[in-house]
Length: 460
Image 1 (tube, one colour):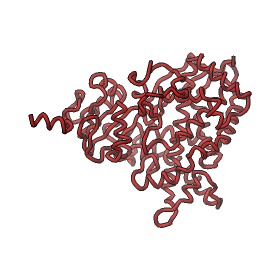
Image 2 (cartoon, one colour; image 1 turned 180 degrees about the vertical axis):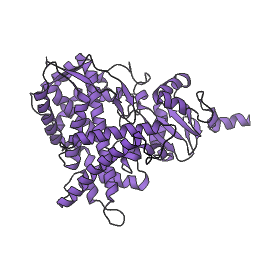
Image 3 (tube, helix red, strand yellow; image 1 turned 30 degrees about the horizontal axis):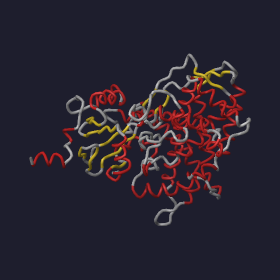
Image 4 (cartoon, one colour; image 1 turned 60 degrees about the vertical axis):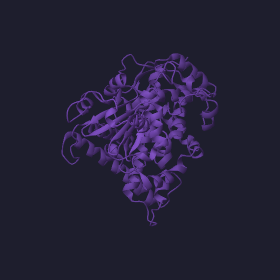
């Protein structure tokens, strides 16, 4: 009777957590290396439900797929989790920027950046976003005719990088956008590959992958340090995000280390251009296969009478267009997974978990959970029209994460994405090419592996 009472009071031990069959010593690492994370997780979910354990060497990786457990991780018990070893692979690229830093360093970085990402500050950037989009669309009009095909993802990557350069750093990157975008693509591929390897070789070893990664990092360093030096040489820092970091001072009153400023620039370039381009690319894939949704978007943007949309339009006139982007983020969230290191003994999903292990949550699966979404595989933007979220679990939809570490650029992404989508719809109707090869690439971000090949159609 005493044991039964203790069992009721104390969470079950780790050995009671469902665990799929695994290899001796290596655990599930061979399966993860061979098949990738998503197939292993989906197979385990069918058998074990919302919470189970994967073993990676001597460590446990707890997979939490219910919003209640994710709420514990990101909100109610957030101090028991951190961004430590789990984020080492991405640190190779972004260093100690706001994405990966912790403690007082993260709080200081967040305080510096926050004013640039308030709703009012973001809304004030709409003019720059639309001006650069107009320039890109003029180029498209000169280059593409009805019946032509092109990779819209590649085009959107270039546009998103130009927008980030102009809005956050007051830089015209049109001359270096191809070089920078390619470096980011290579770096992400190699960083993701390192994270999936059973044995991570030191970066200084001259393997083909390491050589490509080091070259990409040199390119990104050259671009970002040039940005810093040019701004400092100009003697006027301005009022953008770069100025906020250059004007900031540490506890001793000294300027921030140039390497830390570099880390912030690379972080915001990565988070600001790659994820937005991915989100829009998946949106055009969905629109290209759902002509009835395209019709409604075009009808909404035509109500603008051909004028350039504004930040106010996004909140008042372009409500359905914004909902299309939000529904795309539900089905194809660029940040498809999230993880934390357990830093203090705590309870998760009714089980006791310990420091040294890790937790993983997957917005991609939560966004498609039939317990929270009717016909979850269906592309239905009306889900995000005003009043439609009533009764939905607040963490059933987390394309930008949640809690204190929620993406600081969420308003920026939604504004930019909606404006770009609306302006493209004013000039073009894009269908999915019959030659398109659509496949998800589950790396650090969820990119379209072969791009998104679209065909220019005559607007109806």
